[in-house]
Amino acid sequence: MVLKLNTNNNLLISSWHNGGYHENMDYVVNQSLIPSDYSIIEKINNNNFQIKRFEELELNPDKSTGLITSANMDAYSIVTKKYKELSVTTIVTAGADKNAVKAGDAASFYEYDNDYQIIVGTINIITFIDANLEAGGLTTALITITEAKTSVLEDLKIESNFSTHIATGTGTDGVCVISNKSSNNHLENAGKHSKLGELIGNSVREAVFEALYLQTGMCAEYQKTVLSRLSRFDVSFDDLYSKTNGMDIVDYAQIFYEFNKNVKYISWVSCVINLIDEYQMGLLDMNEITDSIFILTNAFLNIDKKIVRFESINQIIDYVIDSINCFLIED
Image (tube, rainbow, N blue to C red; front, top):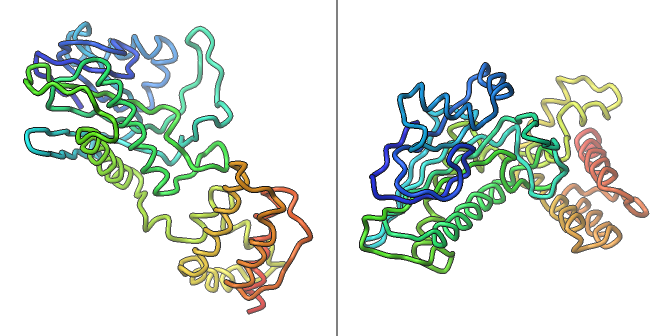
């Protein structure tokens, strides 16, 4: 995806080549990688890879910058939001099914002297603001863009692939925010209290929602099953079935199918997971959530199954699995 910019512009971008703050760039490129590209990047690094691609596209590398992703360029989303004379347009390509992560999760690599392993899966956001912003305003806009993206992942409860937390992004996200230096509308505030911040937030959120759906099918409906909620804790159908003591798998699948999509039981699992999150965030102790989990299980499944005290999150998940099977098999 090659975007030709008006001559009089300024931008802030997380690019390897011409990254950071620049004025009067000619092109922003959102580059989709193919499998053979990864070995090229390992040999020549990301910066030189971008230069190589710009030259192949007959673009001047000195006046070009861009982002890299493994997402399909055909699955992009573009959203424009307007208020009076102000408009904001956001373009997003997104994939968060393999590389979603919460800021602060255990690292996937240690980089030394530009040497590290690339992990695929990226949310790239390019936002055009039809107003005149200085570098500080662009930086504030970038903060608003990032928070808007994170709010989508939180709303969809997209799990980190590297912990049991909700993801805040992927490990390779890219962002570019561009303003129109020819505009007579000079703005300095792109924060969330401002109308500009509102337009940025809404355009980014809508575009990220749509791009995630187009790329991976991720949406609210996709998350509306018991297993989709438990997947954050690496629970699969096989994990549930393995604890049925040899029940016929077809028979089990038939009864689990209805349970899996029943909103009552999705609500129960969601309540339990919310209590786990309270514990993970240090808001409640393990002994403070134990009785609540028992009460919820009894209320939703009519199972009076108790443990003296949970010692770990894994023990809670095992309890949930056992409770599901007790309900399904003995019901």
